[in-house]
Image (cartoon, rainbow, N blue to C red; front, side, top):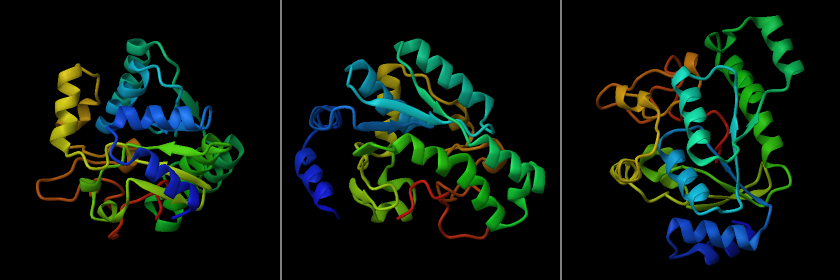
Length: 233
C-alpha cells in the first residue's frame, strides 16, 4: 500500500461512510470522484453524495450496451437529485475498428475478444474519467465475491495511480437493501429478477440459486475470477 493510501486509511478509519466521504472531499478538493453503474450499492453512495452536497464528481461509463432498466435508473436519479452524472463514452475510432473487423458480438468468441471489448468500452473511458484525481470512490462490498473478500476498504490502484476507497465495503446486502427502502431510492428492477451484478446487456444474465454473485457476468467463460479489469487487483 502506498504512502497516500496509508494516509487516507488513517483519515477514514472509524468514520461512517458520509463522514469519510466528507473528509476526503475536503482533504482533496476537486480530486475525488465516484463511479456509478446504478446498481444497489452505487445508488446508496450517490444518495450520500448528493443529499449532503459533497463536492465529489459522479460519473458513469456509457458502454453503449446497457440494459433499458439501467438507463431508466440513470434518468430517474438525475431527476431526483438535480445533479449531473457525467458520462464517459468509448473512443469511437477504437470501437469502430473493433466492430468493423470482428462484428458486434466478437466477445462471445474468445476470452481475448471479450477483454478487448471491455478494454475499449470500459477501461479506456475509465482512465480518462480518473485522470488527474487522487481518490476513486466505488460501491465494492466484501461479500460480493470471493475475490473481493481479500481486498481492503482502502487500496492503492497501481494502474491508475490513485487510491480507491470503498465506503460500504463491510456492508451486507441486507444493509444495502434496508438503506434503499428507508430512503425510497430508485434502483434497477433487474435486481428483483436475479441480477445481483448488472453490466452490459449481452454479457449479463440472472444468477441461479446457490451461484456466485458474479456468475451472471460473462457466464460462457470458464473463469474463477469474474472481473473485467476495472477493479483488477
